[in-house]
Image 1 (cartoon, rainbow, N blue to C red):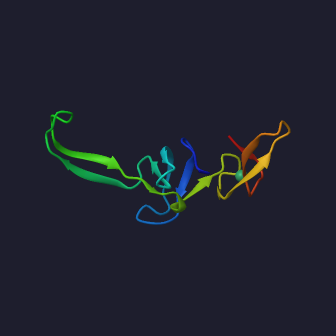
Image 2: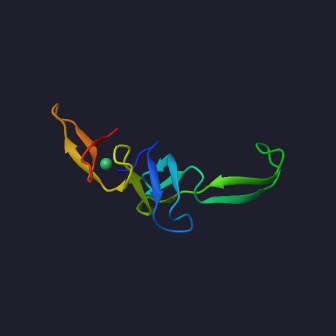
Length: 103
Ligand SMILES: [Zn+2]
C-alpha cells in the first residue's frame, strides 16, 4: 500500500471529492482506507451490550485507496507516490512532483 496511516490525502472521487483528511486506518486486503471526517454515515444503533445507549452513531466508512491522492507535506500538492532508494539502501516513498522523500 502506498498510502499509510496519518498521511494527509485529498479525496478525488465520490461524494466527498475535493475534501482533505488524515488517514486513520489502512485496510490493505480490501484496498481501502478510512479517512477522518470522510464518508461518514449515520447508523441507527440498537441498544446492545457494548452500545447501551443506542440511537444514532456516526461512523467513517472505508473508501477505495484509488479514490484518494496523497498530499505532499513538502510542496503541499496532491501527488503520485514514487519510490526512491536512499543512500543506505532502504526504499522510501517520494513525491513525484518535488521529489522530496515522504516520511
Ligand atoms: Zn512534493
